[in-house]
Length: 186
Image (cartoon, rainbow, N blue to C red; front, side, top):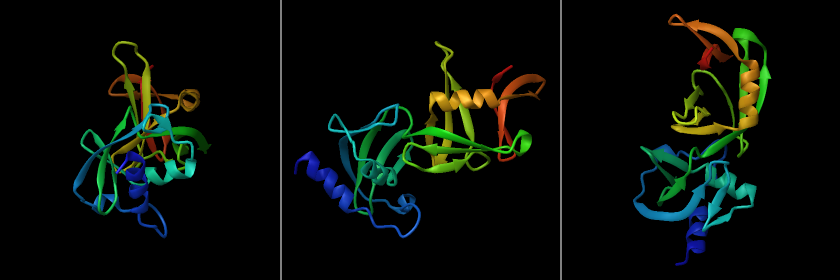
């Protein structure tokens, strides 16, 4: 069977969920090998080197992604195939701010239209590249999957940043869902 047939077979196996996401955490099919599917750092999905241009198809695939350790898979009840993810499987492309100060709530929307409110269940984290000192900000989406926060959205976070003293050090960070998320030392 060619690779196009493999992707179509995978799509056909996705159960039609009435509401919410399929329970991929409950499925443990045999590993069927890797397929030539890649999610680039900018959130673009590629199949056999070509971008997948149909957003509904990308959205459907995004509902069956699972991360086991450092590896990413598309999972159905009967098949598990490996895919490549350059950084994070999602990108947070917009930010809605409600309230201010410690009562502030930050709502992120991903490139596949999934929304999460940053807080205890969906924490923010900020990695700093040791060589370039460039930040890579992330928000937890579900299970152990994250979204890289788009640069424009990160700039919005920086504009919202406030000072806070933590362990006798000054930090800049943002509040959301009753939690303070440090971005960097002040």
